[in-house]
Amino acid sequence: MLTTDILKALAQYTADMKHAVTLVLQTGEHEKRAELKEMLTQFSSISDKITLEERDDSARLRSPVSFGLEVNGKPSGITFSGVPGGHEFNSFVLAVLQAGGVKLKLNESIQNMIKKVTKPLKFQVYVSLSCHACPDVVQAMNQFALLNDNIEAEMIDGSVYPDLVEENGIQGVPTVFMNGKVFATGQIDTAKLIDKLTEAQPEMLEANDAAEQLPMQDVTIIGGGPAGVAAAIYSARKGLKVTIVADRFGGQVKDTMGIENLISVTKTTGPQLTTSLVEHLKAHEVTVREHLRVDKIEKGDIKTLTLTSGEVIETKTIIIATGANWRELGVPGEKENIGNGVAYCPHCDGPFYKGKDVAVIGGGNSGVEAALDLAGIVKSVTVFEFLPELKADQVLIDQINARDNIKVIKNAATKEIHAQDGKVNAIEYTDRATNEAHKLTLQGVFVQIGLVPNSTVLKGVVDLTKHGEVIINEKGQTSEAGIYACGDVTTVPYKQIVIAMGEGAKASLAAYDYILMSKPVKKEESVAA
Image 1 (cartoon, rainbow, N blue to C red):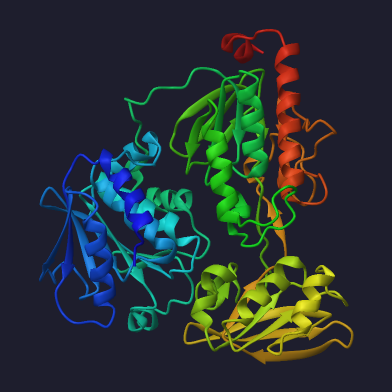
Image 2: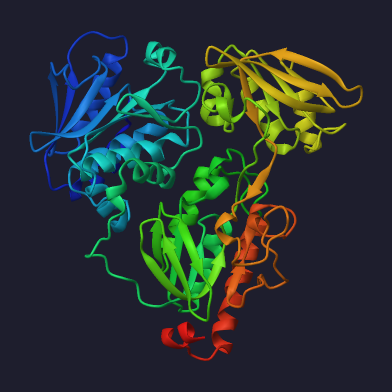
């Protein structure tokens, strides 16, 4: 399964391991077990610090296609149920390396929060190997387990355990269970997991006396998408003290599978572009606060940001690059059925609808691309467009017209999503031309109707439009001196990656000019003002 080149590369990574890691494979029979054993055998051959042991450990391991990680002979709390291939191969490799003592990726402030958990927490993360959003969740949970003996984390490949998927009513990934109950599902990331975990474990937010406060920053960027990363790189190149706060790098771009309009890059994917953005960022002196959000912004000559970890950052300027989230339909049955037939990521959740009838709401590029992706998996796709004509590019429209299992309904207003026994079974819509009501039987609804700005934390800080966009001028300046904005959260039209990058660079240069033209201000003067 693993080529010689891959094994050689992996061997180099294991050189930094400090502890012995044992891969404990549950004994027994399973059609996938031979494949799993071959992978683990090959993997364990790359280092004398990694061994494979077959053992009956049914108290901890779910089935003969489950294996756990032990560190120096003790359980690490990490288990994989299924063959961790596809996107989850990196999760497996990182788990072994980090269990072996390689530095964790989580920010130190987050690590301190996780260490404060005092109650036993057992997590199961249901994934599909084609889900590009799942590895981040699996990797975060694995690190939680390594940081705290009270936490256990298990990756479960839904395709290997269809009975569990059916029993738990899972129709989307990643889906996370905590102590046997649904904890999170759908579009989740590490920052959202931490938010939900602090709700259940408020002791995590207790002040950390050991935490060191950053010195005064020249520029603090909020957001890790193309605009935010561009702003951070440009600011760092000016020799400024720069911090970037990001709940996740890549933003919405990370959920995009096909990118063909980024000039000079013929074709790439969101995950690939995100990796390149992070690598470029690491080449510069930038303080990173990942998997965190800004809870509060205080204005003044010196601005103060309070993060979800409780950390406080003082900064001369702020660049807002918080981007946007998927827009919701806002109809009955939508929120109630997220993860049970309502989804926003066709790449993540499409495999769960194999052979079923689904709908895509939205006839723009995102909606039509989603329909094309799903058409190769599901039985049929019906695209609902609110306007009389599709808004997608003609090249995409030509492609769906060539598919036998894609139907388009135009001038359709979605009214309600129906469910029975906890699962979506129909959609109700109105023909806007005739006002006639219709109901279509189906098993899944994918919502692709655009984005809504992430600007909640900015209310009362800077001026916003009625739609929540940050109002800026030609230099990215907001209504508040020293606060700039860029990317999809702003009033700049045409939400494109290449435009966001340029706007991020522009905002950085404007912030630099502001700092040059401003007289030095001490914190005491700012407070007195």
